[in-house]
Length: 280
Image (cartoon, rainbow, N blue to C red):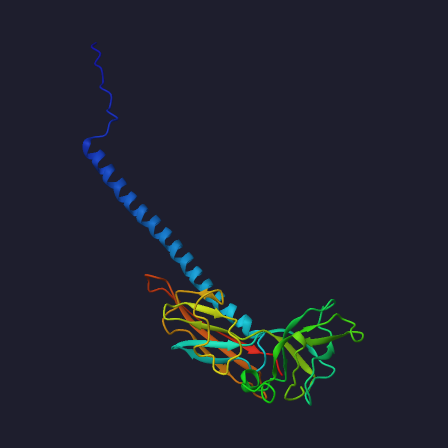
């Protein structure tokens, strides 16, 4: 009986099978790379949109935070070289006075101490019953403007009596206010500040330019007295709208702007309102 050897089956790939595997792997790799790249790009776009939205929200909040502490009737709009501007006088401190010079000038007056005050030293221009824009920015302080020409500083609590402070004008200056406040309220305030855009799509905060009847052309064009708030604004997209106070509601300031991504059509349009709760 003859024994025949049975040949073993071959386990190797043929050339055709190898080519087919390479082609299939190439297709899968191409699809995977495209999927991963699109997912990564989507994450990048989402992050950039979030950054754009955050930039717009922060810019609006920075402006409206200042508006919330504005002196009554000091918020106004003006145009500086075609750029939209919002101006206001920031309140630093407020309290109630015991008496205020109205019939004649005086170097000081007595007031209830400021909240948290102990040693004194609170300072600012004194504002009493600013019931109109003219009383804030008027040119005749003795008869019209309700804000002192000079800065005043408070003395320590307890002088001249318990829970009282003496408010004294700097350098021995004197002042007389046009009228009393119905609630004996007064404010210590800073000089006006303004928020304006420019032709390059930037939003600026301006300060230290003093009280002006018309602030157009008076804001500083360069230097430390202007601070950049935001950039990448769409041209002419910044707008302010002031609704005056009525019997049923306080005054309202509405701010809107559009921020866009450089080199892209991505835009964020944001609008926000804030009530002016301070009253004369």
